[in-house]
Length: 87
Image (cartoon, rainbow, N blue to C red; front, side):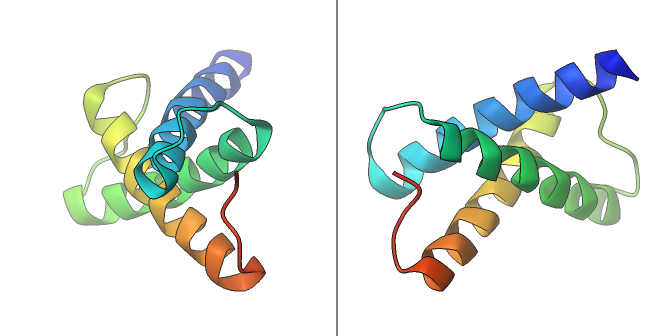
């Protein structure tokens, strides 16, 4: 349980930073990127499991890629709702 939470935070942080960089070209690492990345990792994990038909667990390239896709979706929605990026 604790291990899964730590992995989720790490993958979410990586995905959030990547999504923040992809959207703003800013390499700064901030808390909002991590939060959006963690939410995005849930979205990406759900989407990935639906598309691939398997669960995405642990730290792997596939789980980071799907978390990145989810973080991009969540960051885009955040930008549309608030009118500003996470930076």
